[in-house]
Image 1 (cartoon, rainbow, N blue to C red):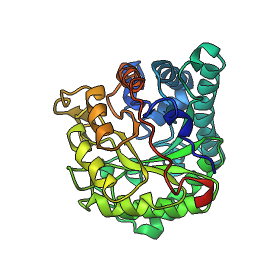
Image 2 (image 1 turned 135 degrees about the horizontal axis):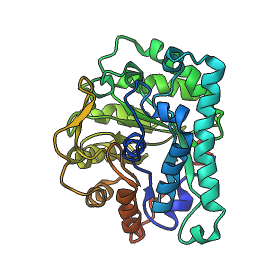
Image 3 (image 1 turned 45 degrees about the vertical axis):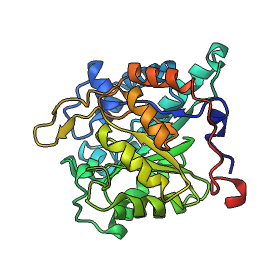
Image 4 (image 1 turned 120 degrees about the vertical axis):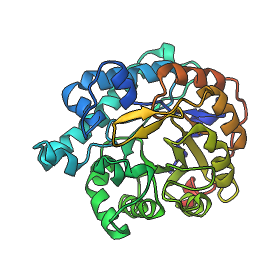
Length: 328
């Protein structure tokens, strides 16, 4: 397989991811008071999902992440949507992002200093389906076998959806990461990144140390990057250094704004970190991250600032050894 990120790193040393989807939808008027979160907007206002993707590509994002984080077969069944309807909805989410990307790229004016952007299909954690904040605790009753069985149906659809890769994100525990690797192996041509939620500077949300599971995941031939998302920005640099110490895999980071999600009150609490996303990006890049974006409460303006900074980064990261034809 070719290196997905080489065209971006050939022109600048950073691959710029998009920012928040759900909170950006909310900022634009979507009602997310629903267990499906952004999945509700996918059902009711797909045009608004498209508008957010458009805004991030225009801001300079190299990768769009789809509105499939909480759209699972089980959650959709609760709304009376059968398996066929759920499959169609997942495919629609990917198509919306692809159509946005293609429309952006159809304008030659958008080709300057850019490679053709990618679409990553979001695979959210089991905790997101529970809708109780478990993705920030990792307190699951399912073991690895059960997690793999739960993830597989949606994973199968997204692996065949036409997305360029999968974004397995906000994973709180090692057992869920291993379950996702098992799902991935059923699709040998598919590539993915796996990013974890973390509670502090060295541990993922379950309390397990980050470095050992990062090394395990980063060594997998189909994993194009390993890292951290939806985590307080002040923890990220240390977590990146922990990854860099144990694996040569590319590192992906897209933290939230520093606020905390209250799963009981269904609201954001605490104050933002006070540091802008682009200020953080410089530090995370210096620590070793090359795929950088934002998660909850970040905006197209934030991504635009990161993209502008990325144009000044000239360092080209060497190809990751296992992300080559020879390593497949």
